[in-house]
Image 1 (cartoon, rainbow, N blue to C red):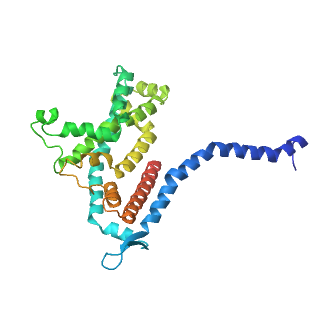
Image 2 (image 1 turned 30 degrees about the horizontal axis):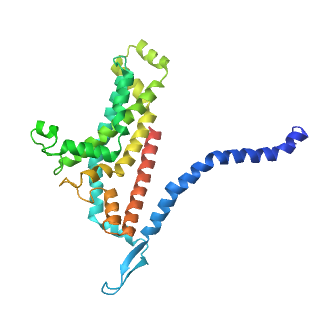
Image 3 (image 1 turned 120 degrees about the vertical axis):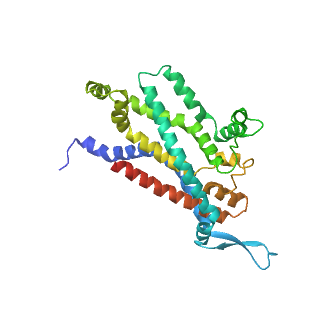
Amino acid sequence: MTTGTPETQARGPGEAWRKRGAILLFVGPFFALFAAVIVAPLAYAVYLSLFSEKSSGLGFGGAETVFVGLGNYLDTLKDRAFTDGFLVILGYCVFYIPLMIGGALALALLLDSGLARAKKFFQLALFMPHIVPGVIAGLIWLYLYLPGISPIVDLLGGVNFLGGDQVLGSVVNIALWEWVGYNMIIYFAALQAIPAEVLEAARMDGAGAVRTALSVKVPLIRGAVITTVLFTIIGSLQLFTEPMVLDNVSDGIVSTWTPNMYAYNEAFGNNDYGQAGAASIILALLAAVLSYVVTRWGNRR
């Protein structure tokens, strides 16, 4: 049995179509941009990864594009230069993620406490390095790492920040300088959203500042922490800009130091776009799997 006046019933289908049109008008640009920026490049990378350039005969003839299926993927996974890049990423994450998350969280809790003064100034000062583009940040720290030019190197007695295994710490330092302030702002905003009644109840129960921070504040911003951990893991897999800037002056960094650098070198150094596409897709799949694992872990906790 239908309800409503005849005018309402007549207006129903047209009104529904107008609502769908309004929704499409708002979400349409997002999906168009998403398809153009994300879906299309991924689809093209998948297409490239299925083909390879082969030379006929003794190499005197022109190269031809040959369908190789999963051959590029198998060659990439068997290449030690590619797999060793993940060991670099693993070492990078071991140092970078705890320092970044812990540092940003400590700074946010400090600014949120009653001990902090000039909060706006310190928020801006800590966030400013994130505004600097990654290439410029790498060049700034390259100057500070170069012996004979850097006042820091001379002050520390000639420590070689760009040699051997020490270069990993140098890259971690640049990333921390860029991202700690950004994540601190996220945590500070989450802390500001905690109801004052909850904090007052903790104080009435006798909890001190440290106990309140660790037992009340941190658990209540767990969602923000998990989100930044997820973004940090994905960003670590994409490590490229900072080591690329240091590559020309560091004997500890090679052109395939990270998986992203490997894909770049295959594409623009060896002109092997199929291999580069396969490496990129493998990296994207790994990022998707890790995103799913971290999300499920966060929801379970």
